[in-house]
Image 1 (cartoon, rainbow, N blue to C red):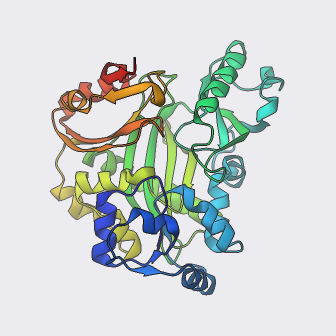
Image 2: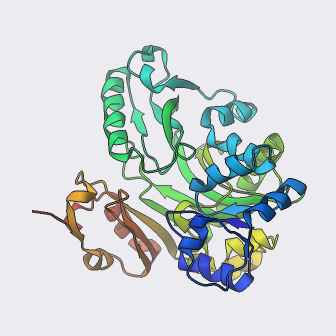
Length: 391
């Protein structure tokens, strides 16, 4: 069954729910976002009863906003246990410590960030909210001299994002301070089956403009990325799944891979794949895999066959986050047409309400490997060239 909530449901997900008649929990939010009576709704009472009787009932959500419903209706459930494991970044690091024994991290309350003895920390490091989302409130700090400036920058950013998400999704009361991991960053969509074995559905490379970039602007996937990482990622995730005792559970995990091949997790987003229906839809555009169907129907991809049909292009997901410094309420318009002309093969554009969220939308593209420059160009852009501000 699926638990739907704001802010967004893609047309691709809607179509699958309609065709497959996946049971949808009948919440006010779900009803308000679906405009067709042909969907298969089940009552909240029936959903709670089914999950209470079957601890490993398959449950998926399109957004972490729905965690509040799980907490209110399933306080002793397996899904909530798993959610708490992954939303608590510090707790997850404690659980997975045996997989990376020499990895430095600690937890610091928000109101102690300016007074903590940061000179004793290992630099460079990353500061991030213990319960976070969408790279908000994250900063890299290269030396003790940069600490206070970074903390002030985080506080200013948090003022702009205050109230956007429930505290179950984003809460800046505590921060994790952790060692900067020198290596390439990736994200993986997966689920753990009835026996606790991982099923990898998608692997993406997270591109950055420079060493100080902590944004979520560009993710890419390709046959080359999938083939090179599939085996080591499966091995790592099976270790993680055994330690966390996961079954019938979807997960979007971000990690870094060091030059030695060691994988160190960054964070895990529970009970879903990429937020705002992003990475599952990218998998469909890039190699024709419906991740929702694979999870609900308990299928495992035949990657060897999939690789035979995939081309060698790069498929990207571009998050058009507002990094211009211009608040959404001061923006009159955004020139999506000019943006699209920057790319040789745009596939899908999704516009969002940039006055409510610091985000103009999502763009999915296909790019030849020799034309990666178009992706690095948008990676370095503040997007201000597409903005017309109000007079």
